[in-house]
Image 1: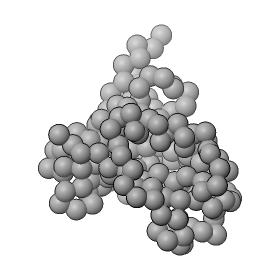
Image 2 (image 1 turned 30 degrees about the vertical axis):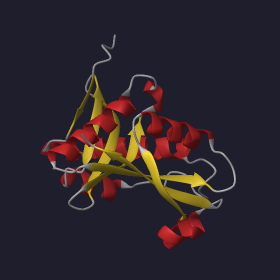
Image 3 (image 1 turned 60 degrees about the horizontal axis):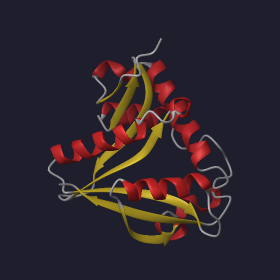
Image 4 (image 1 turned 180 degrees about the vertical axis):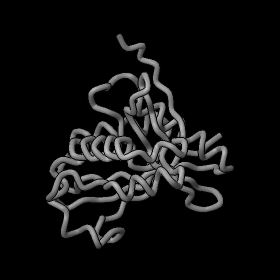
Length: 180
Protein backbone atom coordinates (compact mmCIF):
# COMPACT_ATOMS: atom_id res chain seq x y z
CA UNK A 1 0.00 0.00 0.00
CA UNK A 2 1.39 3.39 -1.00
CA UNK A 3 1.57 6.19 1.51
CA UNK A 4 1.39 8.81 -1.25
CA UNK A 5 4.31 10.71 0.28
CA UNK A 6 5.74 12.91 -2.46
CA UNK A 7 9.04 14.71 -2.06
CA UNK A 8 11.19 16.85 -4.32
CA UNK A 9 14.96 16.85 -4.21
CA UNK A 10 18.09 17.53 -6.18
CA UNK A 11 19.65 14.26 -7.29
CA UNK A 12 22.70 13.08 -5.34
CA UNK A 13 25.83 12.04 -7.24
CA UNK A 14 24.84 8.36 -7.19
CA UNK A 15 21.70 9.01 -9.26
CA UNK A 16 23.60 8.70 -12.53
CA UNK A 17 22.80 4.99 -12.65
CA UNK A 18 21.57 3.80 -16.03
CA UNK A 19 18.19 2.74 -14.65
CA UNK A 20 17.57 6.24 -13.24
CA UNK A 21 18.57 7.86 -16.53
CA UNK A 22 16.38 5.45 -18.52
CA UNK A 23 13.41 6.03 -16.21
CA UNK A 24 13.74 9.81 -16.58
CA UNK A 25 14.14 9.71 -20.37
CA UNK A 26 11.10 7.44 -20.67
CA UNK A 27 9.01 9.55 -18.30
CA UNK A 28 9.87 12.90 -19.91
CA UNK A 29 9.33 11.63 -23.46
CA UNK A 30 6.04 9.91 -22.52
CA UNK A 31 4.70 13.09 -20.86
CA UNK A 32 5.74 15.26 -23.81
CA UNK A 33 4.32 12.80 -26.34
CA UNK A 34 0.91 13.38 -24.78
CA UNK A 35 1.32 17.07 -23.99
CA UNK A 36 2.54 17.87 -27.51
CA UNK A 37 0.68 15.28 -29.57
CA UNK A 38 -0.01 16.60 -33.04
CA UNK A 39 2.73 19.22 -32.84
CA UNK A 40 5.71 17.10 -33.91
CA UNK A 41 6.28 14.66 -36.76
CA UNK A 42 8.10 12.17 -34.50
CA UNK A 43 7.11 11.15 -30.98
CA UNK A 44 9.52 10.50 -28.11
CA UNK A 45 12.11 13.08 -29.03
CA UNK A 46 11.96 15.60 -26.16
CA UNK A 47 15.13 14.33 -24.51
CA UNK A 48 17.71 11.54 -24.62
CA UNK A 49 20.13 9.71 -22.30
CA UNK A 50 23.04 12.07 -22.89
CA UNK A 51 20.99 15.19 -22.17
CA UNK A 52 19.50 13.70 -18.98
CA UNK A 53 22.95 12.56 -17.78
CA UNK A 54 24.30 16.06 -18.41
CA UNK A 55 21.40 17.66 -16.52
CA UNK A 56 21.82 15.25 -13.60
CA UNK A 57 25.58 15.83 -13.42
CA UNK A 58 25.02 19.58 -13.51
CA UNK A 59 22.36 19.33 -10.78
CA UNK A 60 19.91 21.00 -13.15
CA UNK A 61 17.09 18.48 -12.60
CA UNK A 62 14.85 18.46 -9.56
CA UNK A 63 13.24 15.07 -9.03
CA UNK A 64 9.87 14.19 -7.51
CA UNK A 65 9.62 10.86 -5.72
CA UNK A 66 6.63 8.92 -4.52
CA UNK A 67 7.58 6.29 -1.96
CA UNK A 68 11.10 6.11 -3.39
CA UNK A 69 10.10 5.93 -7.09
CA UNK A 70 10.80 8.85 -9.44
CA UNK A 71 7.46 10.25 -10.62
CA UNK A 72 8.50 13.59 -12.03
CA UNK A 73 11.25 16.05 -12.83
CA UNK A 74 11.85 19.63 -13.83
CA UNK A 75 14.90 21.27 -15.41
CA UNK A 76 16.14 24.51 -13.82
CA UNK A 77 18.52 27.09 -15.29
CA UNK A 78 19.84 30.55 -14.56
CA UNK A 79 19.11 32.99 -17.38
CA UNK A 80 20.75 36.14 -16.03
CA UNK A 81 21.23 38.02 -12.74
CA UNK A 82 17.46 38.47 -12.29
CA UNK A 83 15.80 35.50 -14.02
CA UNK A 84 15.78 31.74 -13.58
CA UNK A 85 13.91 29.36 -15.84
CA UNK A 86 12.21 26.02 -15.48
CA UNK A 87 11.42 23.69 -18.33
CA UNK A 88 10.93 20.10 -19.31
CA UNK A 89 8.37 19.73 -16.50
CA UNK A 90 7.19 16.13 -16.38
CA UNK A 91 4.80 14.51 -13.89
CA UNK A 92 3.96 10.83 -14.26
CA UNK A 93 0.47 10.52 -15.85
CA UNK A 94 -0.10 7.35 -13.79
CA UNK A 95 -0.12 9.55 -10.68
CA UNK A 96 -2.22 12.51 -11.85
CA UNK A 97 -4.05 14.54 -9.28
CA UNK A 98 -1.46 14.13 -6.53
CA UNK A 99 0.11 17.57 -6.99
CA UNK A 100 3.40 16.38 -8.47
CA UNK A 101 3.57 19.18 -11.04
CA UNK A 102 2.72 21.81 -8.44
CA UNK A 103 5.39 20.50 -6.08
CA UNK A 104 7.99 20.50 -8.85
CA UNK A 105 7.18 24.09 -9.86
CA UNK A 106 7.34 25.20 -6.21
CA UNK A 107 10.70 23.42 -5.82
CA UNK A 108 11.98 25.14 -8.97
CA UNK A 109 10.83 28.52 -7.63
CA UNK A 110 12.54 27.84 -4.28
CA UNK A 111 15.70 26.88 -6.14
CA UNK A 112 15.52 30.19 -8.06
CA UNK A 113 15.05 32.14 -4.81
CA UNK A 114 18.06 30.33 -3.31
CA UNK A 115 20.03 31.58 -6.32
CA UNK A 116 18.83 35.15 -5.59
CA UNK A 117 16.66 35.39 -8.71
CA UNK A 118 13.57 37.58 -8.64
CA UNK A 119 11.72 36.18 -11.65
CA UNK A 120 10.92 32.66 -12.81
CA UNK A 121 10.48 32.10 -16.53
CA UNK A 122 8.95 29.30 -18.57
CA UNK A 123 8.31 28.73 -22.25
CA UNK A 124 5.19 27.16 -23.71
CA UNK A 125 4.84 25.84 -27.25
CA UNK A 126 1.30 25.96 -28.69
CA UNK A 127 -0.24 25.31 -32.08
CA UNK A 128 -0.88 28.52 -33.97
CA UNK A 129 -4.25 27.75 -35.58
CA UNK A 130 -6.00 25.29 -33.26
CA UNK A 131 -6.55 24.69 -29.55
CA UNK A 132 -4.59 21.77 -28.10
CA UNK A 133 -6.39 20.45 -24.97
CA UNK A 134 -3.20 19.84 -22.92
CA UNK A 135 -1.75 23.22 -23.89
CA UNK A 136 -5.01 24.97 -22.98
CA UNK A 137 -4.94 23.18 -19.61
CA UNK A 138 -1.32 24.28 -19.06
CA UNK A 139 -2.06 27.91 -19.97
CA UNK A 140 -4.90 28.03 -17.43
CA UNK A 141 -2.81 26.23 -14.79
CA UNK A 142 0.22 28.51 -15.21
CA UNK A 143 -2.05 31.56 -14.93
CA UNK A 144 -3.64 30.15 -11.74
CA UNK A 145 -0.24 29.69 -10.10
CA UNK A 146 0.84 33.24 -10.89
CA UNK A 147 2.54 33.13 -14.29
CA UNK A 148 1.80 35.85 -16.83
CA UNK A 149 2.46 35.66 -20.60
CA UNK A 150 5.14 38.18 -21.60
CA UNK A 151 5.36 37.74 -25.37
CA UNK A 152 4.56 35.26 -28.11
CA UNK A 153 6.58 34.68 -31.25
CA UNK A 154 6.39 32.23 -34.12
CA UNK A 155 8.59 29.21 -33.42
CA UNK A 156 10.37 29.78 -36.72
CA UNK A 157 11.71 33.05 -35.29
CA UNK A 158 12.93 31.65 -31.96
CA UNK A 159 13.99 28.15 -33.03
CA UNK A 160 14.31 27.95 -36.82
CA UNK A 161 16.27 24.69 -36.48
CA UNK A 162 13.08 22.91 -35.32
CA UNK A 163 10.73 23.92 -38.15
CA UNK A 164 11.28 20.77 -40.24
CA UNK A 165 10.31 18.62 -37.24
CA UNK A 166 6.93 20.31 -36.71
CA UNK A 167 3.68 18.74 -37.88
CA UNK A 168 1.80 22.07 -37.52
CA UNK A 169 2.68 25.74 -37.23
CA UNK A 170 3.44 26.67 -33.62
CA UNK A 171 4.03 29.71 -31.48
CA UNK A 172 6.33 30.09 -28.55
CA UNK A 173 5.14 32.05 -25.48
CA UNK A 174 7.39 33.18 -22.65
CA UNK A 175 5.72 33.43 -19.21
CA UNK A 176 7.09 35.12 -16.07
CA UNK A 177 6.29 35.06 -12.36
CA UNK A 178 7.76 37.50 -9.87
CA UNK A 179 9.23 35.66 -6.91
CA UNK A 180 8.58 37.25 -3.52
